[in-house]
Length: 615
Ligand code: ATP
Ligand code: MG
Image (cartoon, rainbow, N blue to C red; front, side):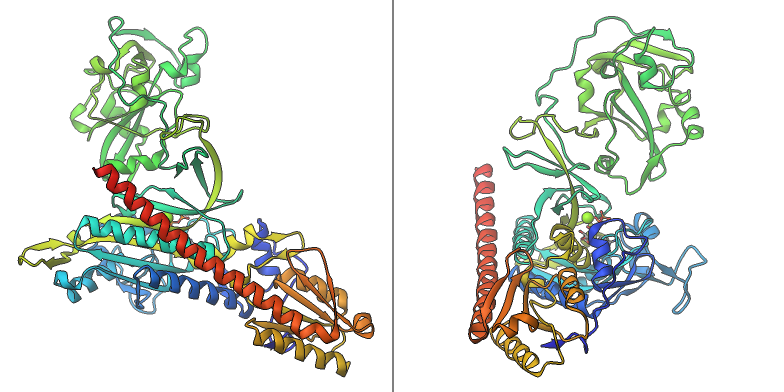
């Protein structure tokens, strides 16, 4: 047990000026963290206790999911990254240094970088250490510091520059094995989030710069989240908006028949979808083709969407470029022959078709069939443009942003949207990293194969803050029992009174014996201050001893998440407090077991479904 007067929980009445959201304000006011600089935080003694508990539960579940813990350096010789498959895409978020001790990298090639994640470090390690199928599968993980030069660090630990991550990397002999490792980790994540008392949902996610074939994000629903989750209550479909699809285009949609010859018409000064919609033209946005030009790994390409749709930029990742960006007007004009606003992809109108890496069309343009597009001549458009006949399309794909209300791809029911905080992410990577690095193993027939990888991350600090975002009230934090820095707070109203102090020690001892972490508030503060602080720091069970109550022969017991206060005769105090602690611990153990059983059942059901699909 700890005495507050000898411990350190610097509570504050006011929130810091840069804290915009409740959890960030509470982190600081309750003495959980202190800011060092933008996106850099000290975990204060009180906060560290929660972090440690979260890490421990995480460790238990990842171990159960097959993980083996190790610890890798945070400082990486840059060559590991330069030789890796995503240096170009990742370098900007990395802290780079010329030589040990120098803060900045003047040249293009740094000597060291700080690890934003560790695929580039673990793959060469496994390549050296594992050569036979007998040693596979393996899943290595660590719980360690990461650094990312986030452009806009904000919301406290939510988007920090230095943060703690559990990161795991699985290595399997084949794709089926990699899927098993992936499902085991998904189950471990589900158990972990349930055990720490946070509600999370697994949603389909974009693989982004990480590469790989599929991925899930674990989202905590919250208004302040950075991500949009598109979901369907009916079917259980849930996907990050970056990845979500809908069933607005029938799977078997036929090519529309042409309705006439392509005809050019003058549109002086018209450069937007809305202008072409307005009089005198009156072309509905849903009948227009929107033509965008991007540059992927130095090569320009065209994307076509319906005029009424928005591009979901992340979906361009499916085209296989490691870096892409919108082209500038200066790049566009010599290629297509016009400025943005008059662009199109009708055969024969593109000035330099050979300069394009491709024309990629969103499938929804098939709903247009015959529409209107730019003529690649400033101030002119073309009508009667038939998708199949007139557009030189390299490949159809899904590039549009889904809108709520569109039909769910599984059930056809209207999709909904809600905000979420991404607390964890799992990727099935395939062989991107093992091929790049030459991580092979030899099978029983002496054949060599690339290892099939997965990678997995949980933001420990972000998760702690997401818990607070989900579990607080106007007065302060409400810690879930399993991760509370202290579970029982003994509020000693008059520390000078020997009988009260003795009673507090006795009750605290009973709570500790029963399995709780106990804090005794023995500070020389007024009761009002103590109660306010107790609510602010959010310890789940508060026992109040002293003052009028003790004179009347009672102590008080109150759960942080409840309003009622129970008065307990002094003679029953130790027994009742111990019973409450035991009940809370039992509930946590039961929840943990349930979580594990549920995760295991889900995994079995999923495996059964997959098997059924294959048959
Ligand atoms: P985001 O989309 O929020 O930038 P990410 O997709 O880049 O995150 P991953 O590479 O998937 O993040 O990292 C795994 C986990 O690490 C995330 O799910 C998140 O919990 C945590 N994490 C990532 N970036 C940060 C950060 N800047 N601050 C705190 N935690 C982070
Ligand atoms: Mg992610």
